[in-house]
Image (tube, rainbow, N blue to C red; front, side, top):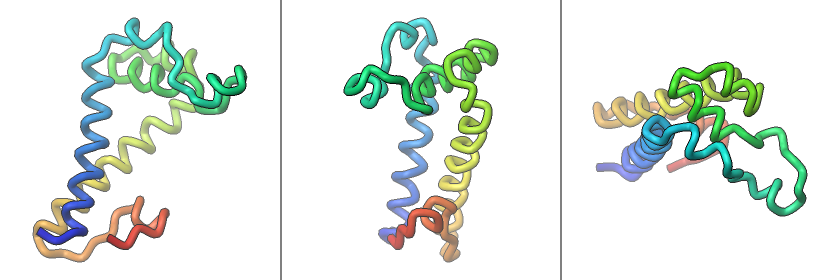
Length: 112
């Protein structure tokens, strides 16, 4: 398998694993914890604070709770899902020997 196909597979697998883990973990488990390094270093909330817990709540169907954790989740969750699906589509197209670059590769200049 070509290096580009392997990298697409790796990115798609990481995205799927993150979404699967958040879907399996109950939101109550994450509620008392903060995963934001900026918050831990400065004591101030950044624009992304609460996003992990918000994504977890969305995957459990708790949209009001998700909005309470971080209102930006209404934009970021669909965007992350679309980027994940794009990585999966890129991997499949590369398995079919088509030269397709994913959105992430185009945005971040990845040439693998």
